[in-house]
Image (cartoon, rainbow, N blue to C red; front, side, top):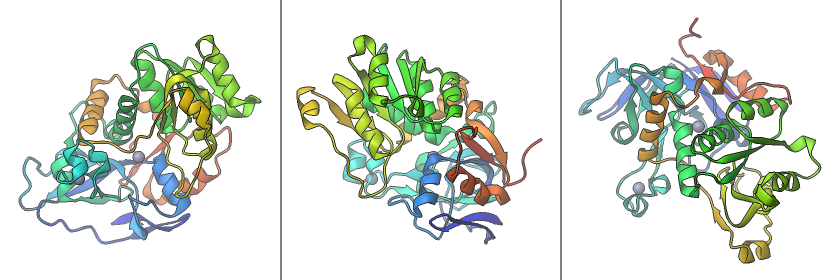
Length: 351
Ligand SMILES: [Zn+2]
Ligand SMILES: [Zn+2]
């Protein structure tokens, strides 16, 4: 089969590899669509991901497809079913799983290889995190389950209230999803973005106010000026994963407010925070990582309900052969590029 193989930093190739063989409890899925994701771009840029993938490896993790083959002993799934196979599954046995913090599972099993004609889904994901796609939901929309699940969990963990002023730093797919969900649950949303195109996208997703980092002398002042009585925001969510943005977050939040460092910077990154502001301002700092089986199910339900705008996130369509160029291009995005997510179709772009 044809598949994208990641060899290291900015080294991605399209190759012919054997179709994975399924063992007991495993399933082979014929990929109908795989979506590009900021995490994949980060992995491509850095050449590794501490927990998710060690090159050389099959690449890509947001997908939807049709079951091609079912291994011995699988219950509940049959050939021909339309499914979303999530990119990980917890062990359900360790300390963290017993505390309902499955995202922190000591043995979280990751699966990559969505940019390929077929993907093998390991037993644990089959059992915990493989979901049947309802007939009215397209493969493209269903593939949004994974990133949306991370966002839902992140917002829930942050403890946002209806009416809160929530600032979201970052205009990538995850930042935009936060904007849309925060708006939907009744928050006053300020979006902080960099590129011109992201200003439009943030508006479309429902941001009440937008601060473009390249157009203001001081981002923190610009955001605070938009908050009620200029006191700062109730909640700030950092969805960029950069040191500077982590530091802005703490300076934008109001006394008694909460910051969620959702974006993960490169290993070894240190930030400087004002301890006085944190302590006497009684500021809560949180960081959310990943999803749980429960949030994955909720995400697919929201997609199924039709209340989440999925189509707006998919700004490009491609085939497998385009994937290396696609990532190379994402590295050099200019301020007028329109990319949010690209849908990759291993069997050819549908007409
Ligand atoms: Zn993702
Ligand atoms: Zn576990």
